[in-house]
Length: 361
Image (cartoon, rainbow, N blue to C red; front, side, top):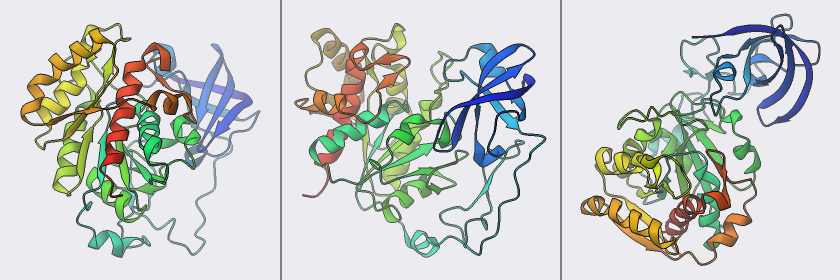
């Protein structure tokens, strides 16, 4: 449950789109805290803050922060009704939690995109890359743009990890490289808000005019080490949604030689479960050429049972290493950088490259 603390802001360390990192003094000593100004207002030195310190106290990998719940002595004003549709939404996310935001859904009656979304029924064959982890997003993008630098790529963020898109410094760093972000389900803070993955995909295609979409959860994968107990199981459902909507599903495989856990070495059990047991629609599963021999053998053996439903696609790796090293944001997965888990990032880039080959020339 919630571990509460009260504190005083000492300084604002840094900020990025939608978030501010703070130093806060508490009775337990100084802590690093994160505030979302869109929810709680703009924190300033000297402000009293109420904190949720659970993830920090427990040492959760993605947590790392005390989270600001409120600035109780300086509450933000109600959103101003400036005559636009911005504050006329009825889409409630993080529902029935104390910080539930009420947002304008892309397909609501007040949305400027209502007519477009009401008429949208198909993805028109758009390639959609699905990935288990948020860390795959920049590598997939690098793979698409390695061959098609002009391609418009949208990110459809699911709610398996962080709910606020603002938590992601990766998204902030990819500003100008993506044509937009759609937050779906309980997730919020994207350029567009959608209630379902289906609506989010249609918005990516028909509102953001994406050539390629990437579906992945926000930072903070949940996993219990059991077959079904991980948030990435939703990948299989995303594959089904892409198929239903007439898209072209491309599954980014979670491949690793650097992960110390046996269940994630070779092809992670997350990929094998989501694509092999949940996805009912066939997908392209790209495998990069150039993996070191032992890893390649593990991958081939793991994917053999999936070939009955999916298409295993061999993707040339030439130039992908350079594209990954030129990525506009740092590449990191579970604390491992590019050279510490090269196969993981190469597989994500290969999925992006394959998606690019599916675009009309």
